[in-house]
Image 1 (cartoon, rainbow, N blue to C red):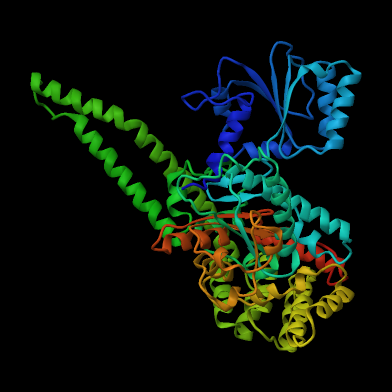
Image 2: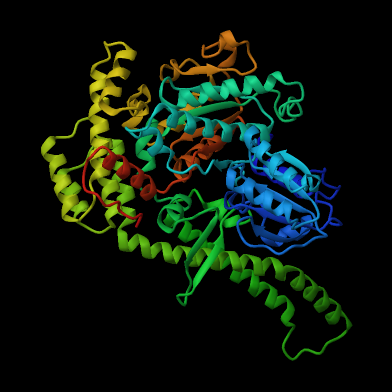
Length: 620
């Protein structure tokens, strides 16, 4: 497929490690030039899922350090810097160049360096008469983390809180929108595509879409822009669609428990940057990579946990059979004399056995890894009744409610404080109307378990506001927004029309259903009001629903503002497999969050509004 973000970002990084020269014919950087790599914590996170430490040598990197660590001088070697463009990094670079620590400096900024910082860099290195040591300065537009071929994160923390904070001022909101636009611009520049942009009206989604449209327009005016080389994509002459949503579009998915392998490993065991740390068999900590290099993870990540356990057993049995087969072939016949033929036959079998050993060893490693992960996961499931939470939450969202006795028994049963809080919030979101007495009983049950109810009360408040808005539809849109501003300061996003999907009543996620409709391009009342932005079209047509921009589309980038998760990612990938025509969807978000981490943000918002108790529950 044309839109392989992981491959394209990796290629950009390899070119950077090759001192921004094209790679040689083998795809590696020039190994003759040995160099030192200096990065900051953010750029280390960008590199981590793409290039393993052991592979850096392949690209001529002999040493690598964090920029804020004390480093010794290596005078005869060039240094490649890969850092964010901020004041502290600029000051550190000036100090390094002035000493000088290395022979020359190739400076790469993860996004576009602002002019004031560039001037500071020039002034600082001129003062120490060392500016000649800076070989080049590059804007790399790589300020995003690609975890798999079709999922990326801008790693912008707490954006949901920042965008919904009642005390946030206009400038605060603008700054967050600018950061999101900058990250998305980097993704599009790396893919070298200018998409058609679609989004619901109002809230952060429209703000980001509108600002991104302007940013792309301004950039496309320049002659040698970042999108000229990608103008004619081999696999599709058609441009992709970029669908932008805000977390409030479908709040429940950020909170609910899921029983599929990938979301469960992330939510229960804390998968971070494709790395998982769990207890080994003898209590010693074990660290595992879970990415596209793991065939079991790729093939079974979207299966329910019981199916994964069966698949591990199947793989283990197959492995044992293959080992037995090798042993049989190489064992010879007991008591038989060797003649020439036997020797030739045995030698052939031995050669086959030797050749199959690396593959068998690798298979066993993968089986052992997932056996250990599944064992730890099973412990969490039993201790916290995670299977029960996932099943009951799913039932609530489909049926639109739950029996009161069952509801309270779950809240008084097994599970961590955050599990119970998440369950209670899903209860609120699942039903259109909730009896006051039942809601009060839930609050009492949460307090009995010493759960901070701030997040629960925040969602309750937002939901009641949403219901009020729905009933006030005779008023003009502006009046409603003004009224919301008086109630909640700048929290516009929480009260926009996108909130109609707060109550999911379908097994297929509202996000997936909407993306499918946007990609199909057929008339659909659900997306009738969606805005269209085409950065290549004349300015006057922006924001209108021009018929030629409606699709159908083969490729989509779906971006969730305010935190995404592996549940949505899995649902969108299932959509591409379900389609008869080949379709391709990339999923991105401001940050990947577990249910517990997202509830922490809701708790913080509840506290800012003076709701509930004061302590934030930990994610476990």
